[in-house]
Length: 125
Image (tube, rainbow, N blue to C red; front, side, top):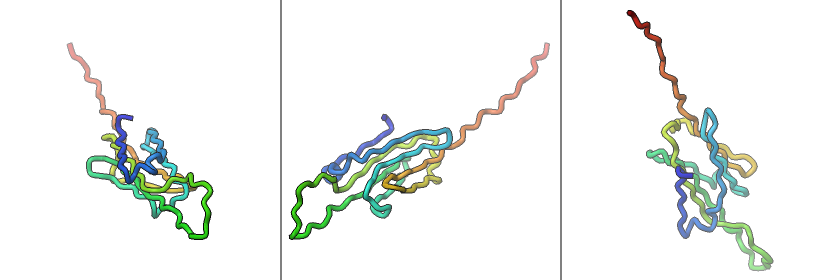
């Protein structure tokens, strides 16, 4: 998407593949991010002045016990950060976020576009 700003640096690349869906409904922009295994305290949702929504977090590496033998390590760990430029119609002061079953949902309400009041004018003559 042209409004998406992806930030990938060496410290975020390990976990940068965090998948985020962005849909627009008549009432809001809704972002859904898969963050399995993370607690809400490990995820951060921020908005910058220039209408940029930033979703970031970190999954820490599991502590190793000297007596453990690892056969396979496939789960990614590290930091992630995704940034999205919000459109002009976003209500920046009413953004809400919730997390359930490993899915972060960020809802950005939209300003209601009011149709101009059109009044018919009688033509004399």
